[in-house]
Amino acid sequence: MTVGTVAASTQVREASLPIAIVKLASRALVEVSDALVALLGSDRNDLLGSDATRYLVGEPSAALPLLSTGKILGYEARATIRDGHEGSLEVHLWVHAFDGRRPPELALIVIDDDSEGRVPGLPPVADDGVVVLGTVDAEWRVERVTADVTTLLGYEPAEVVGTAFLAALHPGDVAEMLSGLAHAVRTGRSVVVRLRLRGRDGDWRWCRACVASMGDSGGLAFVLCPAVVHGELSDDPIQLKEHLRRIASEIQAMRLLPQTRELPSARELPAMHRLTARELQIVGALSKGRRSSDIAKELCLAPSTVRNHLASVYRKLGVRSQIEMLAVLRGEAAPPPTVPRQFDQQRSTPAH
Image (tube, rainbow, N blue to C red; front, side, top):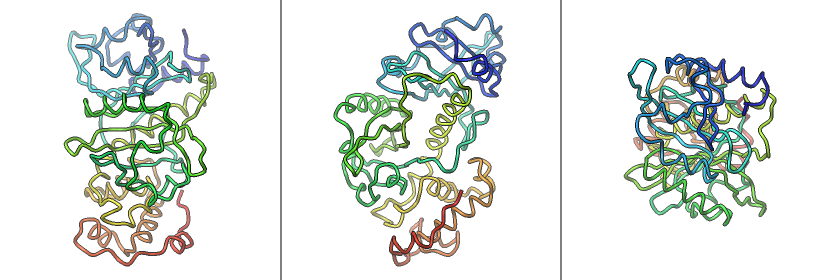
Protein backbone atom coordinates (compact mmCIF):
# COMPACT_ATOMS: atom_id res chain seq x y z
CA MET A 1 0.00 0.00 0.00
CA THR A 2 1.26 3.45 -0.88
CA VAL A 3 0.39 6.89 0.42
CA GLY A 4 -1.53 8.56 -2.41
CA THR A 5 0.48 10.05 -5.25
CA VAL A 6 4.22 10.27 -5.65
CA ALA A 7 3.94 13.95 -4.66
CA ALA A 8 2.14 13.06 -1.42
CA SER A 9 4.68 10.36 -0.59
CA THR A 10 7.48 12.83 -1.25
CA GLN A 11 5.86 15.30 1.12
CA VAL A 12 5.95 12.72 3.90
CA ARG A 13 9.58 11.88 3.20
CA GLU A 14 10.66 15.52 3.19
CA ALA A 15 8.85 16.48 6.41
CA SER A 16 11.29 18.03 8.88
CA LEU A 17 9.78 16.11 11.81
CA PRO A 18 10.20 12.37 12.34
CA ILE A 19 6.90 11.00 11.02
CA ALA A 20 5.67 7.67 9.69
CA ILE A 21 2.60 6.25 7.98
CA VAL A 22 1.57 2.85 9.35
CA LYS A 23 -0.89 0.28 8.02
CA LEU A 24 -2.94 -0.47 11.14
CA ALA A 25 -3.94 -4.05 10.27
CA SER A 26 -0.34 -5.25 10.04
CA ARG A 27 1.38 -2.31 11.81
CA ALA A 28 3.72 -2.19 8.82
CA LEU A 29 5.52 1.07 7.99
CA VAL A 30 4.42 2.20 4.51
CA GLU A 31 6.22 5.57 4.44
CA VAL A 32 8.71 7.39 6.67
CA SER A 33 10.31 10.81 6.70
CA ASP A 34 14.03 11.32 6.24
CA ALA A 35 14.06 12.77 9.75
CA LEU A 36 12.76 9.48 11.18
CA VAL A 37 15.30 7.49 9.20
CA ALA A 38 18.04 9.64 10.73
CA LEU A 39 16.55 9.38 14.25
CA LEU A 40 16.39 5.60 14.14
CA GLY A 41 19.76 5.29 12.42
CA SER A 42 18.35 2.73 10.02
CA ASP A 43 18.21 2.26 6.27
CA ARG A 44 14.94 3.36 4.63
CA ASN A 45 14.53 0.06 2.81
CA ASP A 46 14.89 -1.81 6.10
CA LEU A 47 12.20 0.36 7.71
CA LEU A 48 9.57 0.15 4.97
CA GLY A 49 7.38 -2.90 5.43
CA SER A 50 8.68 -3.67 8.91
CA ASP A 51 6.48 -3.82 12.04
CA ALA A 52 6.44 -0.36 13.62
CA THR A 53 6.10 -1.83 17.12
CA ARG A 54 9.48 -3.58 16.86
CA TYR A 55 11.10 -0.19 17.46
CA LEU A 56 9.25 0.28 20.75
CA VAL A 57 10.64 -0.72 24.13
CA GLY A 58 7.70 -2.42 25.81
CA GLU A 59 4.12 -2.76 24.63
CA PRO A 60 2.36 -0.19 22.42
CA SER A 61 -0.22 2.13 23.97
CA ALA A 62 -3.56 0.63 25.01
CA ALA A 63 -5.11 3.29 22.75
CA LEU A 64 -3.82 1.57 19.61
CA PRO A 65 -6.65 -1.02 19.52
CA LEU A 66 -9.15 1.81 20.02
CA LEU A 67 -7.70 3.58 16.98
CA SER A 68 -7.53 0.39 14.91
CA THR A 69 -11.22 -0.35 15.52
CA GLY A 70 -12.32 3.22 14.82
CA LYS A 71 -13.43 4.03 18.37
CA ILE A 72 -11.06 7.01 18.47
CA LEU A 73 -9.36 9.14 15.80
CA GLY A 74 -6.06 9.64 17.57
CA TYR A 75 -4.08 9.76 20.79
CA GLU A 76 -0.86 10.98 22.36
CA ALA A 77 1.63 8.89 24.30
CA ARG A 78 5.08 8.84 25.82
CA ALA A 79 7.21 6.00 24.52
CA THR A 80 10.73 4.63 24.46
CA ILE A 81 12.05 3.74 21.03
CA ARG A 82 15.16 1.87 19.95
CA ASP A 83 17.65 3.69 17.78
CA GLY A 84 20.10 2.11 15.36
CA HIS A 85 23.00 2.28 17.79
CA GLU A 86 21.69 -0.21 20.38
CA GLY A 87 20.44 2.70 22.46
CA SER A 88 16.98 4.07 23.27
CA LEU A 89 15.21 7.43 23.19
CA GLU A 90 12.32 8.83 25.23
CA VAL A 91 9.88 10.42 22.78
CA HIS A 92 6.44 12.01 22.63
CA LEU A 93 4.08 10.52 20.04
CA TRP A 94 0.96 11.85 18.35
CA VAL A 95 -0.87 9.05 16.52
CA HIS A 96 -3.82 9.91 14.25
CA ALA A 97 -6.01 8.15 11.71
CA PHE A 98 -4.68 9.11 8.29
CA ASP A 99 -7.60 8.29 6.00
CA GLY A 100 -11.35 8.80 5.95
CA ARG A 101 -12.29 5.16 6.38
CA ARG A 102 -13.92 3.92 9.56
CA PRO A 103 -12.18 2.02 10.97
CA PRO A 104 -9.11 3.62 9.43
CA GLU A 105 -6.55 1.68 7.42
CA LEU A 106 -3.64 4.08 7.88
CA ALA A 107 -2.28 6.01 10.85
CA LEU A 108 0.12 8.93 10.99
CA ILE A 109 2.74 8.92 13.76
CA VAL A 110 4.39 12.24 14.61
CA ILE A 111 7.33 12.42 17.01
CA ASP A 112 7.90 15.81 18.59
CA ASP A 113 9.84 17.44 21.40
CA ASP A 114 6.84 17.98 23.72
CA SER A 115 7.50 21.73 23.89
CA GLU A 116 4.92 24.50 24.10
CA GLY A 117 3.48 26.29 21.11
CA ARG A 118 3.41 25.05 17.52
CA VAL A 119 5.07 21.88 16.31
CA PRO A 120 8.08 22.69 14.09
CA GLY A 121 7.80 20.87 10.79
CA LEU A 122 4.00 20.80 10.66
CA PRO A 123 2.10 23.47 8.71
CA PRO A 124 1.32 26.67 10.66
CA VAL A 125 -2.18 26.84 12.14
CA ALA A 126 -4.54 29.29 10.47
CA ASP A 127 -5.85 32.04 12.73
CA ASP A 128 -9.35 32.03 11.24
CA GLY A 129 -10.37 28.40 11.84
CA VAL A 130 -13.23 27.45 14.17
CA VAL A 131 -11.78 26.00 17.38
CA VAL A 132 -13.67 25.77 20.66
CA LEU A 133 -11.80 25.37 23.95
CA GLY A 134 -13.46 24.41 27.19
CA THR A 135 -13.30 22.54 30.48
CA VAL A 136 -15.65 20.20 32.32
CA ASP A 137 -15.86 19.85 36.11
CA ALA A 138 -15.78 16.66 38.18
CA GLU A 139 -19.55 16.23 37.70
CA TRP A 140 -19.06 16.42 33.93
CA ARG A 141 -20.75 19.79 33.58
CA VAL A 142 -19.27 22.46 31.34
CA GLU A 143 -17.55 25.11 33.47
CA ARG A 144 -16.03 27.20 30.68
CA VAL A 145 -16.31 27.39 26.89
CA THR A 146 -15.04 29.92 24.38
CA ALA A 147 -17.19 32.19 22.24
CA ASP A 148 -16.44 30.09 19.14
CA VAL A 149 -19.17 27.66 20.25
CA THR A 150 -21.68 30.10 18.72
CA THR A 151 -20.08 29.66 15.30
CA LEU A 152 -19.79 25.89 15.63
CA LEU A 153 -23.13 24.98 17.22
CA GLY A 154 -25.20 28.17 17.38
CA TYR A 155 -25.36 28.40 21.18
CA GLU A 156 -24.32 31.40 23.24
CA PRO A 157 -21.57 30.40 25.69
CA ALA A 158 -23.79 31.31 28.65
CA GLU A 159 -26.32 28.70 27.45
CA VAL A 160 -23.66 25.97 27.48
CA VAL A 161 -21.94 26.69 30.82
CA GLY A 162 -23.46 24.52 33.55
CA THR A 163 -24.97 21.95 31.18
CA ALA A 164 -24.10 18.25 31.12
CA PHE A 165 -21.09 17.59 28.87
CA LEU A 166 -22.78 14.63 27.15
CA ALA A 167 -26.18 16.29 26.74
CA ALA A 168 -25.58 17.49 23.17
CA LEU A 169 -23.89 14.24 22.06
CA HIS A 170 -25.62 11.94 19.56
CA PRO A 171 -26.74 8.72 21.33
CA GLY A 172 -24.92 6.64 18.74
CA ASP A 173 -21.59 8.23 19.66
CA VAL A 174 -21.79 7.94 23.46
CA ALA A 175 -20.06 4.54 23.71
CA GLU A 176 -17.07 5.63 21.63
CA MET A 177 -16.81 8.91 23.52
CA LEU A 178 -16.78 7.09 26.85
CA SER A 179 -14.10 4.68 25.58
CA GLY A 180 -11.92 7.64 24.66
CA LEU A 181 -12.59 9.43 27.94
CA ALA A 182 -11.75 6.31 29.94
CA HIS A 183 -8.35 6.09 28.26
CA ALA A 184 -7.71 9.83 28.75
CA VAL A 185 -8.52 9.60 32.47
CA ARG A 186 -6.50 6.42 32.95
CA THR A 187 -3.36 7.68 31.20
CA GLY A 188 -3.53 11.44 31.69
CA ARG A 189 -3.01 11.82 27.92
CA SER A 190 -5.32 13.27 25.30
CA VAL A 191 -7.40 11.34 22.77
CA VAL A 192 -9.26 12.50 19.66
CA VAL A 193 -12.73 11.25 18.79
CA ARG A 194 -15.19 11.98 15.99
CA LEU A 195 -18.72 12.66 17.14
CA ARG A 196 -22.00 14.36 16.33
CA LEU A 197 -23.17 17.30 18.41
CA ARG A 198 -26.64 18.80 18.28
CA GLY A 199 -26.71 22.42 17.18
CA ARG A 200 -29.18 24.97 18.40
CA ASP A 201 -31.18 24.46 15.20
CA GLY A 202 -31.60 20.77 16.06
CA ASP A 203 -29.27 19.50 13.33
CA TRP A 204 -26.36 17.18 14.09
CA ARG A 205 -22.88 18.45 13.27
CA TRP A 206 -19.84 16.22 12.84
CA CYS A 207 -16.98 17.43 15.05
CA ARG A 208 -13.51 16.37 16.12
CA ALA A 209 -13.12 16.44 19.89
CA CYS A 210 -9.71 16.31 21.57
CA VAL A 211 -10.16 15.57 25.29
CA ALA A 212 -7.70 15.28 28.16
CA SER A 213 -7.94 14.61 31.89
CA MET A 214 -7.36 17.50 34.30
CA GLY A 215 -5.75 15.20 36.84
CA ASP A 216 -6.80 15.15 40.48
CA SER A 217 -9.65 17.62 39.90
CA GLY A 218 -11.62 14.90 38.13
CA GLY A 219 -12.45 17.29 35.30
CA LEU A 220 -11.69 17.30 31.60
CA ALA A 221 -10.37 19.77 29.07
CA PHE A 222 -11.61 19.67 25.47
CA VAL A 223 -10.97 21.13 22.03
CA LEU A 224 -13.73 21.03 19.40
CA CYS A 225 -13.49 21.76 15.68
CA PRO A 226 -15.55 20.86 12.61
CA ALA A 227 -14.83 17.39 11.25
CA VAL A 228 -14.18 16.75 7.58
CA VAL A 229 -16.31 13.75 6.67
CA HIS A 230 -15.22 11.91 3.54
CA GLY A 231 -14.78 8.37 2.30
CA GLU A 232 -11.21 8.53 1.11
CA LEU A 233 -8.11 10.59 1.75
CA SER A 234 -7.48 12.66 -1.36
CA ASP A 235 -4.36 11.92 -3.39
CA ASP A 236 -3.87 15.67 -3.72
CA PRO A 237 -0.79 16.64 -1.65
CA ILE A 238 -2.56 19.90 -0.78
CA GLN A 239 -5.19 17.82 1.06
CA LEU A 240 -2.40 15.93 2.83
CA LYS A 241 -1.03 19.25 4.04
CA GLU A 242 -4.46 20.25 5.35
CA HIS A 243 -4.65 16.94 7.23
CA LEU A 244 -1.34 17.73 8.92
CA ARG A 245 -2.59 21.25 9.66
CA ARG A 246 -5.61 19.88 11.56
CA ILE A 247 -3.32 17.69 13.64
CA ALA A 248 -1.05 20.67 14.33
CA SER A 249 -4.06 22.71 15.47
CA GLU A 250 -5.08 20.05 18.00
CA ILE A 251 -1.53 19.63 19.25
CA GLN A 252 -1.16 23.37 19.71
CA ALA A 253 -4.48 23.75 21.50
CA MET A 254 -3.87 20.83 23.87
CA ARG A 255 -0.43 22.14 24.77
CA LEU A 256 -1.88 25.52 25.71
CA LEU A 257 -4.90 24.20 27.63
CA PRO A 258 -2.97 23.71 30.90
CA GLN A 259 -2.39 27.49 30.93
CA THR A 260 -6.02 28.35 30.24
CA ARG A 261 -7.39 25.90 32.84
CA GLU A 262 -6.03 28.10 35.63
CA LEU A 263 -7.89 31.19 34.40
CA PRO A 264 -11.18 32.18 36.06
CA SER A 265 -14.23 30.22 34.97
CA ALA A 266 -17.32 31.89 33.53
CA ARG A 267 -18.99 31.63 36.93
CA GLU A 268 -16.08 33.46 38.56
CA LEU A 269 -15.74 36.06 35.82
CA PRO A 270 -18.77 36.07 33.46
CA ALA A 271 -17.00 38.12 30.76
CA MET A 272 -14.60 35.21 30.18
CA HIS A 273 -17.14 33.41 27.99
CA ARG A 274 -16.85 36.22 25.45
CA LEU A 275 -13.28 35.29 24.64
CA THR A 276 -12.47 33.22 21.56
CA ALA A 277 -10.18 30.20 21.68
CA ARG A 278 -7.28 32.20 20.27
CA GLU A 279 -7.84 35.03 22.76
CA LEU A 280 -7.98 32.54 25.63
CA GLN A 281 -4.74 30.94 24.49
CA ILE A 282 -2.98 34.32 24.40
CA VAL A 283 -4.37 35.42 27.76
CA GLY A 284 -3.39 32.09 29.33
CA ALA A 285 0.17 32.43 28.09
CA LEU A 286 0.42 36.04 29.30
CA SER A 287 -0.87 35.01 32.73
CA LYS A 288 2.10 32.64 32.94
CA GLY A 289 4.55 35.45 32.31
CA ARG A 290 5.09 34.84 28.61
CA ARG A 291 6.00 37.81 26.40
CA SER A 292 3.78 38.84 23.50
CA SER A 293 6.64 38.42 21.04
CA ASP A 294 7.26 34.84 22.20
CA ILE A 295 3.55 34.03 22.00
CA ALA A 296 3.39 35.37 18.46
CA LYS A 297 6.31 33.18 17.46
CA GLU A 298 4.88 30.04 19.07
CA LEU A 299 1.46 30.55 17.48
CA CYS A 300 2.88 31.58 14.08
CA LEU A 301 1.12 34.95 14.31
CA ALA A 302 2.32 38.41 13.42
CA PRO A 303 2.99 40.55 16.51
CA SER A 304 0.33 42.97 15.25
CA THR A 305 -2.21 40.11 15.22
CA VAL A 306 -1.46 39.32 18.86
CA ARG A 307 -1.90 43.02 19.69
CA ASN A 308 -5.26 43.03 17.88
CA HIS A 309 -6.39 40.00 19.86
CA LEU A 310 -5.34 41.68 23.10
CA ALA A 311 -7.23 44.85 22.19
CA SER A 312 -10.32 42.69 21.70
CA VAL A 313 -9.74 41.01 25.09
CA TYR A 314 -9.43 44.40 26.80
CA ARG A 315 -12.78 45.48 25.35
CA LYS A 316 -14.51 42.27 26.38
CA LEU A 317 -13.12 42.33 29.92
CA GLY A 318 -13.57 46.10 30.26
CA VAL A 319 -9.92 46.84 31.08
CA ARG A 320 -7.46 49.28 29.54
CA SER A 321 -4.10 47.54 29.84
CA GLN A 322 -2.34 44.23 30.32
CA ILE A 323 -1.62 45.15 33.94
CA GLU A 324 -5.34 45.71 34.63
CA MET A 325 -6.25 42.53 32.79
CA LEU A 326 -3.84 40.37 34.81
CA ALA A 327 -5.02 41.96 38.06
CA VAL A 328 -8.63 41.06 37.24
CA LEU A 329 -7.69 37.51 36.21
CA ARG A 330 -5.76 36.99 39.45
CA GLY A 331 -8.61 38.34 41.56
CA GLU A 332 -6.48 41.27 42.73
CA ALA A 333 -8.95 43.79 41.33
CA ALA A 334 -12.71 43.79 41.01
CA PRO A 335 -13.92 43.17 37.47
CA PRO A 336 -15.36 46.28 35.80
CA PRO A 337 -19.08 46.59 35.00
CA THR A 338 -20.17 44.16 32.32
CA VAL A 339 -20.35 45.59 28.81
CA PRO A 340 -23.56 44.52 27.02
CA ARG A 341 -22.74 41.86 24.44
CA GLN A 342 -24.50 43.69 21.59
CA PHE A 343 -22.50 46.86 22.28
CA ASP A 344 -19.30 44.83 22.59
CA GLN A 345 -19.90 43.22 19.19
CA GLN A 346 -20.50 46.60 17.58
CA ARG A 347 -17.17 47.87 18.89
CA SER A 348 -15.16 44.75 18.09
CA THR A 349 -13.57 44.18 14.70
CA PRO A 350 -12.24 40.80 13.59
CA ALA A 351 -8.46 40.35 13.98
CA HIS A 352 -6.76 38.05 11.46
